Length: 95
Image (cartoon, rainbow, N blue to C red; front, top):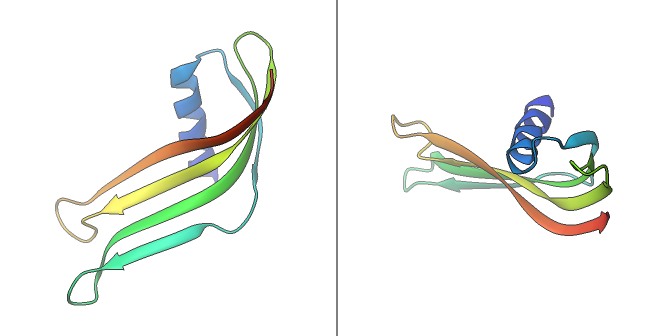
């Protein structure tokens, strides 16, 4: 979980360098989606985490963000392997 929080904070700071993350709460079990190739080997895998993120923006406003943080692995087990991550905001309360 600490890697996820670290990646999430880095992403939020790119949008607003004065953001302060007050807390992160996982709302449930991650949604895991492996995909196998014709030989049955996992070559892609998505792991999606439903989160509530409590932040104070650069103007001092408090927000509760609800969304999903996803890690998407592709070409796993090959030289072309990559893992990307992204945030999908579903709701924002506060401000």
